[in-house]
Length: 622
Image (cartoon, rainbow, N blue to C red; front, side, top):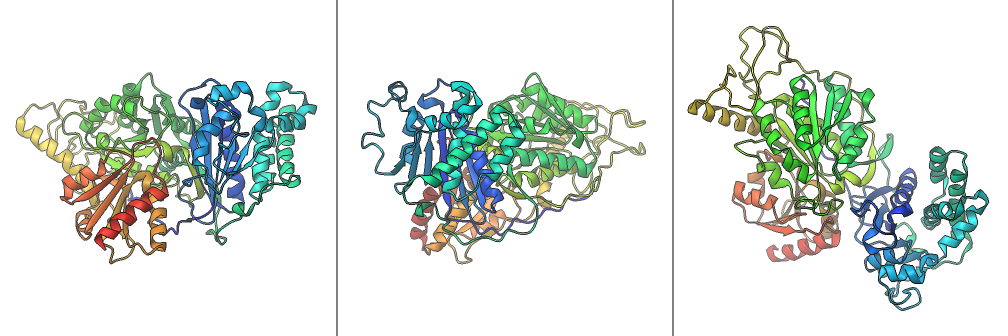
């Protein structure tokens, strides 16, 4: 198989401005759909976007309650927008509960748009309000726009005879129309989507009418000053090419399909549903024509073992889950290490432990990925840095798994899996350009004889004449593959499996630091903290604070030069959405005095949190 050539990281110049908009309402109000329509309109207008869906774990919490509030935040700006923003400039609240749970986040100079038609005595009580906040001084002095969206929507769609319930389902389109006008965008993209989704039906026509009515409301009503909503940055020239918005789950699916195309192998994806990993199963199930087969197993162990069986049969087995499911797969992952077959494992991390907060993000499975198996069972661990980077990471993981005949875990998380950003479609590789060669020559064959460069054993399809051999979880004799209880052989096989994974580092790109060469402080990140760290450091450079940045995509093995690189800094800060797991690895491996900056709230870091931390540490070493 040919070595995969990966593009180096883009030299991004992160946007530090833009506008942040948040929709908030009941789960049934179409909040996520509203956010995506605004995202598409902004992206098609040549803007950079980053999104943050935030929805409750309950499938259907009681309407109007604070624990049933769903939200969608997006940031629109020029150039590379790497984060969804810290605080919304515009908050669109559909009911009292969404106002109560989100008003404290609104920027003091921001604009509140709230559906005053939902502020009834009953809904106020369900939200926990004693008085109507729109009539009291409870809005912290923010500018408020309080149209009766409910009534305006019913008036706009009454000719389509949808009834009260059906009419109210169009409220989100009315709000999208108004927000598009506030952002100086037309309604063409949203209209196109409605036509495609509903066609020329009463529901489609009603949604179009609501959309246009909201946009017209913005045009004809005397609103507060819109200076807030003007673009604060100079226009950005995007590289030529075809773009689309993409989430991390979509990018992983496309990357696995691309790996199938390149290698000529079938991808057999075996999973058991779990939030937020299920989205990947949904994406891949629609790719049957891309040599991708999906299988929903009866449980997590069954899914992992089925994927191992697929690899045994000559396909590339892939399995996926989130933290609790990865725990259940642990025994099967040990089997994959023992039989030395390629396997890709996707872990979309969520807030734990146990079932924890299923729809919230966390990076707390790192130590589980590195050490969470019985016996000496090393595997390769990669972590994508952004939604679009999931595409490259999936291809890279498949290549390493096949080349080294080993399991490879991709550590994504809920934030990366669900957030979206613009993505320039890559040039496709030729089909079969990295074709896998299975062993077919019986001359001198030994199932556990190793390639001298990769230490991988040969991949043999079952039924190949003259290459019959035994595999399984019991220890094998080096070479022949017969079951062995010989103490020296067990030592030899353990050492070989560890050395095989360690040898992956020989093909990894060296770790690099970005930032001033004279920096004494270095910020080290992994996974989804890439974007917020890059943006925070851009802020810091603007105020004269000197700090460098190392971002790690390869967590096991680590880049070979990382120890020397870390030793060149006087102070190291490691922000993580966990209680400090990477920092323990760095201290253990390189004996560096790295400082942890942990966060375990179920939410990603905010830019201002990292700016304050970096500036505070920089002062002590300058």
